[in-house]
Every structure is written in structure tokens, then in C-alpha cells.
Image (cartoon, rainbow over all chains, first blue to last red; front, side, top):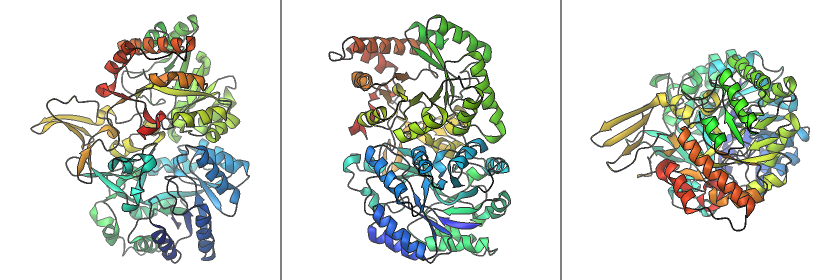
Length: 298
Length: 321
């Protein structure tokens, strides 16, 4: 089992983004997903910039995957998607079925992202026939449901599980960050730049609940499966996806790496590096915001 | 029952679901068993109307046969189409019932013509229902670039998230539309009168608290009042409904094949009133599109039936975004 760094879901300055990936080049990661998957208005890095970064990380020994935009709305979104597919140097992660169409037409192998909604082996088999080499289950999928799929998974299919980070839960036409500032989406003044780990939404009694990240809604809790490595291994999961956060990401990667090597000494300290409370309910077939493992383990 | 009411009041086609979690309205007291479905079909067909079966949740591995069984029953009953979201299930339907007409459910989350055309090429879908996130020019761009018929939501609840890609409900309660066919399930709802006001909770999470003069609505997760940056407000969406009557001439002009009106979670009286207004409006547009304006009586009728007693054009109208 190895580690993947998921695509950066937030909008950081160009300098911060490049500095983050400079550091990431030295972390014990098998692969890095790059690209803007949330909002087409975010432009501080464009495809040529991501491709430059991809070359650098590839030279540093990482497998690089370009991750496609999750909600495609306009013709210009499709143009950007076609450019990404046409480049052909790197594997692409398809995050909606339009990308699946373009990638399969191009005869490319690809990664099937977690928003493709693969809930059963039949659908996974459809994707395998179209060129999928690695897939991610929906983030809401439980261990037991995943086990049932993997019993019948197509031969050679690799499985990656979203194992750390605030959970990407929903996508909208509306921008909730712009809405918070009473700005129209088309003139959002790029307020996402002020919220490096998103904007926390709490209930009226102060309980943290969700995170607003532009058009994406995430959990406020940080999904963490570091205590589940034995069951992930047993299922035959190949990679764990760790989702970028603005601070201490290197420590997070290090803790997972150590745990994979059998050294759990950093596991307990991980909670200190999280931008929210740990949650793992989904993995146990419960509400996502629950935490089955208690404070000591994550 | 509501199906007859919808047909009597002018619906061209009516959606139905079987009485289990194979459809995205798996609420108690809704939906049909096989005998009722056959009766509904007969009623519709006798009057030249259609019945479409919703099988638009995502089948799970261990209950796969429930969904394939539902496809088989749909074919046997002679459903005019089945509405599917899952690619694996579409493959099953094409292989086993090649004559069965397939529609892509809104839960399939296809927002571009590339996605719609994918389902066309691989499974021969003949119609797609688009998520409520595109503006009208974006919808038109889809229509122009696919041979697949396009159906739009016209009236009912306003899903502010892309359908099929919203897990907020399972994050809070363990059940989502994708996996369990429900959003903000009733069994997770708690109401409580407190000194601070009437509180609604979903699996313990406070969704809203109502003052004395405020009307309390069903606690759909995305329509609660929350705190962000020290402010309390409808952080995601106000409890409004979608009503696109104003846009009807534009929709029909760009070649929209059907307008979808939510009725499956509603009373027969609601279904009768809404269907009657929309039938009259569509007939009016077909007669004279240029001169069409929704009558004040229609709008008053629809507003009366709207959640939160107000409505919006949603994403079809760009400034809403």
C-alpha cells in the first residue's frame, strides 16, 4: 500500500502553491494529483503551469496524475478538459463522465475519480472496459461495501481510498464563499484566497459541521483512516489518498508513512496537525460526522 | 392517487417508483407495488399518456438483484421508459431488455453534452434530465450538441447541489440519495420546543431555530440557518422553491423535450393544482410564445404551494448564482 497526495482543493496564492509542491517533492509519496478540480474561475495556475509542475515532480520520482474539473458547466470548461486530455504525457483522473468519454475515445488509461459514483462491481467493470486502471470509491462508501465490490473487481484494477482530509461532499452552481461575502459568483473577488482550508460552517449552537470552499462543500471534520490500515490492507487497497491542507501536510504524510512501515508512534499526535476534529463514520457504515475510534487513536 | 390526478389534470407522462429504495424518493407511504403499477399504467395508456419508472439510486453490490429485478419488472409491465443513474445498471438493461427505453436520471449528474453523449453511445439513452445547476444558455449549449432529448426541472424543490454528487445527507445521517434514496430522512429529524424557539435537528445537528412568527419548514439539510464567520444566515440556500414558469417560452424555443414537475412527495390536491397551471401555461406558449406572460392567478396558485411561500428561477437565471 502506498500514498497519494490528492489534488489541492483550495485556492492558494501562486507562491504558496508552488512552495507546497516544492516540499511535497521530498515527501514519501508514490504519486501526486495536480490540477484545479473545483472552480474554473481559479486561474493563478493554468494548465501549462500545472504541466510544468508535473514535469518537475515526475523528475523528482513521483507518478503524476492530472485531475479534471468535477462540475463541468460551460463550453470553456470542456475546452480546458480537452486540452488536459490531449496533452497525453500524464495519466488523467476523470471526475465526471464527460472526461470518461474523452479519455476512452483517446484510448488513454485513466483514473476513475470518487465523484463518478461507482457503487457496485458492474459499474466498475464498465469503467475497466473503457480504460480505467485505478479507481476511487465514493467517499461515503463503508469498508463492508468496498469489500463486497473488491470481491468481484476486474483483474488488475487498482483501488485508491480517500483516507485523510476534509471530505469533499457536494458541488453546486452557486459559490458559497462569494455568497458569504454578498458577492455574485461572477465577481467573487477570489475570496477563496483568504481561506486556505476553507470557511467553517457551524450550527447555531457553535458545533462545527461543514466547510465552504467556493462551489464545493466539505465536511468540517477531518476524515482519518490511519487506524484502519490493517483492514485497508486486508481488502487489497493499493493506495491511500491524503488531501492537501495548508499547514503541517508534511507531518501528516510522515505519520501515514510511518504507520505503513509499522511505526505507530506518530499516530496519536496526528490530531494536533488536523484543521478540524477527526471523523471516520463513513468507513464504519455510519453518519460521516461520527468518530468511532475515540480520541486516542487519531 | 396522485398518478391519476396528474393525468386527469393534463400531465403527458408521470414518474413512478417501486416501493423500496430503488428510487430517490424512498419515503414511507410513497410509491407502488407491482399490481398498483400495472393499474397506473393501464390508466395512463388508456388516455394516451406515459408512465416512467424511476430506478435512479445507485445499486449496492449485495442488493444488486433488487435493481435488476426492478428493471425486469419494468420491462414486463410495459413501462414507457426507465430512469436510471447507474452505468452498470444501464448495461444490464440494454443487454437484457434492448427494447426498453432508457432515460438518464438527474442523479446521473450529467451537466455537459460530452457526458450526455457518453450515455447515448454506450447505452442508447434517449432522454436526459439535467441537474438544476446550469444557466439557460448552458442548457441550450447541451441541447445543440446532442441528439438526446433534454428534460428540465420546472417546478418543485430547489436542489442547490448537483444531484448525484451531494453527500451532505449521509455525512449528517448515514443515508444519502445515492445510496439510500433519501435526503435528510424523516427518521433522523427531531423537533423540539425550547425557550429560544422551535428547534429542528437532523441526527442531533441543529439545523434551525424558529422565532414565534416564523414558519417552520421541513428540515432539509442545505436549507438550515448556520453560522459562518460570526454571521447566522441561510449559508447554503433559503427555503425557497424552484418555479420557472417565466422561462417557459425560452425553454420550449430551445427544444426542451419535457418539463419535470415534482409531485411524488406531494398530496393529490397539490399535484392537481400544479399540473393544471403548467398544462395551461405550456398550451398557452405553444399557441403564442411571443405573447406569453404567466397570469397573476397562475403565479399566485404556484406561490401558495411553494416551500417557504417564495420561489426562484434558480441557476437557469444567472444572477442567482
